[in-house]
Amino acid sequence: MELKRRDFLKISTGAAGLVLLQPSNIDKVCEAAENSSNEDLAMLVDVSKCIGCWWCYVACKQYNGLPETATPKPDDPPPLAPDTWTTLFTKKQGNTWKFRKQACMHCTDAACVNVCPTGALSHNKLGFVQYERDKCSGCGYCSQYCPFEVPQLQTNKVSGDALMDKCTFCIDRVTNGQQTACSEACPTGAISFGKRKELLEEASTRLAELQKTNPDACLYGANELGGLHVMYILEESPEKQGLPADPKVPAAAMVHDVFQWLGVGAVAAVLAGFGLNYLVARARIAKEEK
Amino acid sequence: MEARTVERFKKRTIWFHWIHTAAFLLLIITGAILFFPGCGGAAAGGATRIIHHIASVIFIGGAILYIPLNPKRALQFVKDTLTWGKDDIGWLLAAPDYYFGGPEDKMPPQGHINTGQKMWQAVVLGTGVVFLVTGAIMWFARGSISEGVFQWCMVIHGLAFIVALAMLFVHIYLGALHPRMTESLRSMLNGKISPKYAKHHYGKWYEESLKEEKD
Image 1 (tube, each protein chain N blue to C red):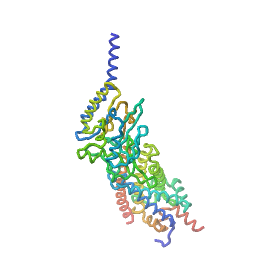
Image 2: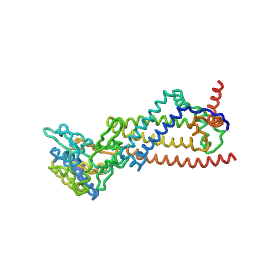
Image 3: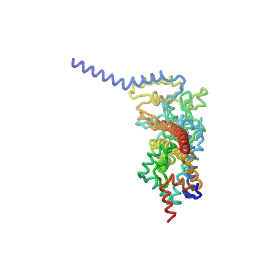
Image 4: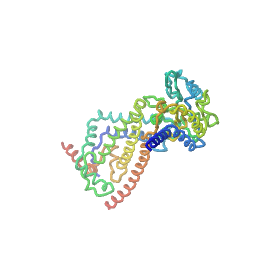
């Protein structure tokens, strides 16, 4: 009896561990695939297939007409900048380098869209975060609210004049039946482009395969921030890949939203109060004077 | 009305008031389009941000420049704002009825500015400092400070805006439109009010200025 009970505990603890570590991730991915809109486009980056050739970086520069500012090297990767919309996060592991393509994540709950006052940042009906450059006022709110520190500004410190730039999801290409420049350029198939729903299904299959040998393999972006439109198949935990484990829209954005409507209410209340006050005061003073 | 007038504001104070007003209105307009939901389209291109920055320099710079130009009045401004007595409590209790057309005799006599104006000055000073600090951080320190600091600066700048805007409306209404404040706006244009108006609205100050005249 005693033995049996111990065995039962062992088995159940092991099962719980399995549920927590492996299948739950795949379950969540499948669930996200079911819930994902049929319209949404996305990219799926499989870091296990990335060889660090920088073709995505070059293709992005070339297609978007951005100047080549530095020869990219693994030990000195160019950071995201107003003229660098995609780059690689690099990491040395033993004798080899590990790479992860890094650019705008095109969040569903996008803090940048939330705080952008001019509507320069908005959601395209295909799900990604589109950017209309001529609408940018240069306020920089997006750059300060993005949990991934993606939006980059060129700023004149003295006048304060500024302009933001980031990945556009190659809007001109993807709305004309083409794929993004970076995914087209990728020679190893590390960057897949397509319908988000299908990519999630693909990811769950790939993940199941990877998890056979690597229990740490996981998918990033299935459910984070309402679902990202750039998702990663990672070989280790997100933190080790320079990604926040649980990205959130900063609380200040919510407070600011409340204040904005509070401001509207305050102005309306004050103006209504004046109207009432004027009528009452004038009538009473006129009565008194008589 | 008596022909004699009482000097309420000096020329330089009047100039300062209206330059400050113009700068503040520019700040409000260029800030409001970023703040109020659905108005941001007007800020596209960023020209209004440059106007906001120029106006902020005039707004803050003007206030600082005024101190050496009229040190006595500047000191008086701060002293008036901070000095509170039982007549201020009396004013607060009697004011609601009075401003809704109630009897005048319940209002305690006031100094050079009344309790309501004191509160407005406190709002100007308080929000002015908040606008300056949070605004300067967002203008000059973005990227050097943490995102969290920037985020809360933006939120606090917005909160100060709500307070300042609502109180500015009150200031404009009471200064220029309220049926009882008949000479207030004029005094900020030519600096003078009638003795009757002075006696009714600023009793303590009127008595003092009469004494000073005799001296």
